[in-house]
Length: 306
Ligand code: DHB
Image (cartoon, rainbow, N blue to C red; front, side):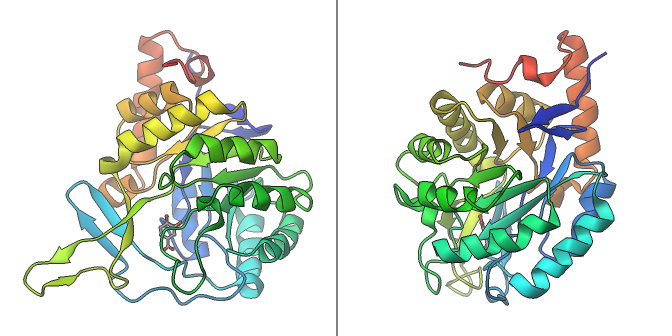
């Protein structure tokens, strides 16, 4: 019998499907993915200060996916960490919980991690790659060579036993190089990819960009070949496991991402087009594919395209 359960960084998952960060913005709302049977949920990135978010509209559907510029809307470290604590207490054991953190300052990253460690999430994911914060916050640290590694290094000193994932941007010259630097500084795994771009859509009647912040990160099926290539490159460069995501909608996309080198599979934008039921559909279809091909566990085919 084929079986979807797996271990990633020593943590058990009932299936490989993960809700990526930012698809849902309000902390209590993430329970919808848990109720849908997802293997893990990544909460919206927490920042040091409270952030109201960017002007509306923050989200726009185009024919091959979504553009979004939420502007890291979240309650900030004090209220946000209380909400996260409550969420973890209520849902621990039903699904793996990954807490996402964002900052452009090393010291703030350390304080955020120190605040989150006592709440005992199964993972900490470092968002090193938001495409929407250049103005007030400065560029994401993971976009510069050396930056991502520096964050991982300081975070690993305070993260204790909680595995740390570095979430990387495709909008760099060499994502594999950045993954290697994260691995060298002690990252336990890599999440890839964050959104592409930023991109822009223009209302041709109004002759103005549609998104409130004008530009937004691009997700959805249009970016899938970029995500597959990034995961493939990272798999060649590092030994730590990969949470692969970017435009995955169907079981064929899941298999492709696993063959490229991913052990866990993020599915986010597809929840907009298909609803949360996409997770159950993917589980059923992936199991069927495994049965047909005599695969007992997906670990047998991780990276098989290399
Ligand atoms: C936002 C953050 C991200 O990491 C991303 O990829 C896209 C949007 C945001 O909150 O604006």
